[in-house]
Amino acid sequence: MAKKKAAKNGNGNGANLGFEATLWLAADKLRSNIVEHGHVLTPGRYVGAAEVEEDDEPFEEKMRRLVGELDEQFAESRKLEKAIRKNLAGIGCAAEEPV
Image (cartoon, rainbow, N blue to C red; front, side, top):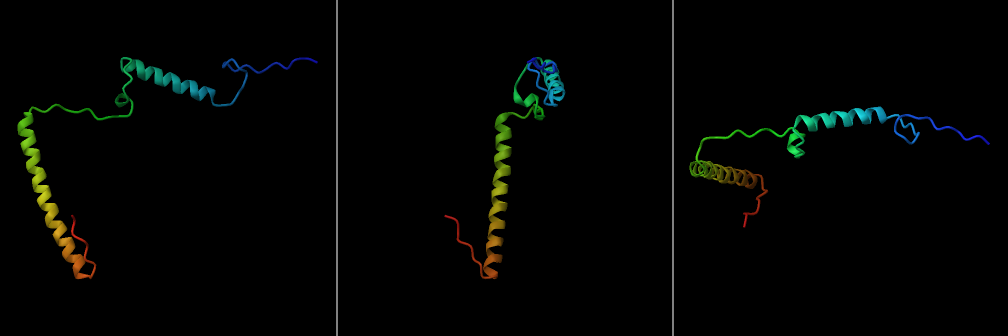
């Protein structure tokens, strides 16, 4: 009985699954991206992470400003919570006070 010769498709095992060409193109693209980024493999390089701009505001000033903004937002939050609780009570659905 004669041996059947496997069809060669370049992958060495004779199997032809139909996606090999697409897979090799994707691998080539990945390799070119890695070379383009200087062989740096950190995920941020490949998932589109936004670059962070440096600012000239000193840390202490920035923290004071941000804490001030946070205090204003907390005050607004308390004001809105009070209004929501009043509206809920007005329709007979009083919410429990937070602990």
